[in-house]
Image (cartoon, rainbow, N blue to C red; front, top):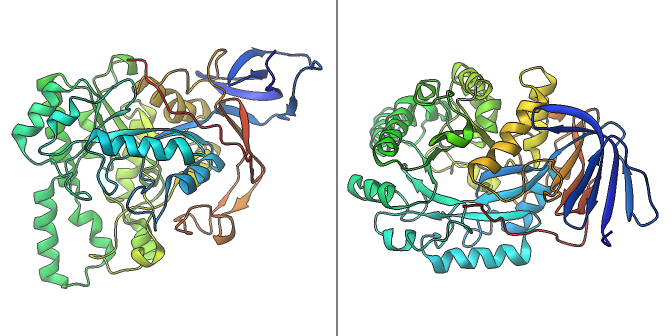
Length: 448
């Protein structure tokens, strides 16, 4: 038996469609045994009585913006991955629209170097596509990089890919999974100009989902899907926000066989346009939070498997930045610390089963990105696990927020569940609001 060995007893393990009462033994970095009863032996380093808590795989968040390099006044890999660990997210995939953009192999490698030294959670990155970097795209090692990210709506720097010929060439030539942000830029510009004429600089925040409209989303996502079908590219559509887009996706194949997959983010499942009055620009995201009927359609598509993955699109800005008027306030908000407990609320309200939640936030990202030995509670897999107490209420406030930006759209919300333990690669890295001094993070690898 290896030096590091942790025995978790009396857990309710949620995994692969079932909830079972089991003990689980961690040896080294991996799960070595799962059984109805595992005896305590002298050479086991630590014994934890789960006392009926849920033991689930750590969430794999396929879309975060941790702002490093270049925007570290808002966040950095260290601060945000630490918040993620506290929130039950054990692996993240970070986006390329940092400064400089990660659109060259050199800049991408700098981000890997930063994460290897500072990340609290397992990590990978997406490579960014532009109108003129196909040569760099073709150099990317698909066993080390999660995917190629294309912004088909405006983004930081030079990352708007709006040349149809370039798009088709990228879709045709890369063997990387292509992840896309879909909003039609021309539609948004036309709408913005229309409302500037009506309101001047004082456009009400409630116009955000009218400006970044259902039509802008549908036009862009339908074109991307059409191109993927034409070229045979593997496409993953990020942060869907409209009922109309649901007609573009299928649930008649297993996830392993799907060439076109879909993601929804927690804010689009939680908020609606009715919340702009109280939350203002704090819930200004791109794509915009839309109508309650859109929110219901997203839930329906999640439950019927047209939507495959739940993510956060964690994208912090400072409170000063978010406090600007509509046209000047940036889009995005922090979410990783509160993702799993927010989803647990939906489970406890009967909106979704816990088995289905684990499928969407743990199993499916691992399958979709072909992540090696993560996302499941299985013998031989890395011990990326969390214990969740479903009956330990707490309220989000400034004193318990871990994001560098210091605020949350969930402030004042009382969650009924709490993440009590987070295990990363076999190490107990977080326990009852305290972090281990030892970082156990690893770079994600992909079975491709």
